[in-house]
Length: 155
Image 1: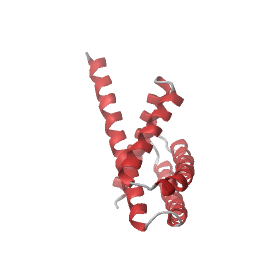
Image 2: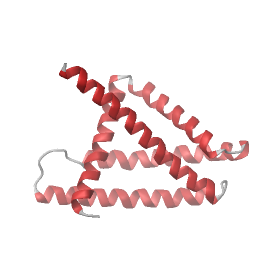
Image 3: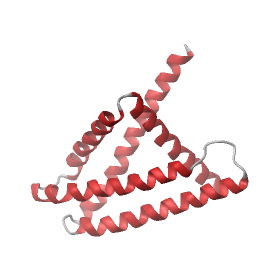
Image 4: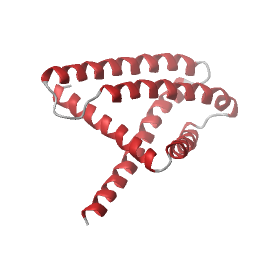
């Protein structure tokens, strides 16, 4: 992947996090996060078709997986600077981005092993696929709200 694409990906990722945080602050942060979380649980539950036994074992592990992912996302967002950067600052941000991706991969490997104790490999693939799909759909909702807000401000 070219460095320009990495920068664009990092910028998009940071903008998504920032817009979600702004939305959460405006709408009572905790309540909005809980609403999104419950929608995600419902979405994944419908897509994964977990048995009752699988669900009881799966959700505590998945919730911890989400917490671990959120920790590294927060660290990346804190390190990223959305302004004119020097080449040295851009190099630092790229290095932080690569470290983030490595940590993300480590977490995924760790949780794949945990998920294997309760789910088939096919269901584990569905977990990651539908988790990503949910995030895409959430990003679209955020984008539409931001676009709508911008249109209202413009007049």
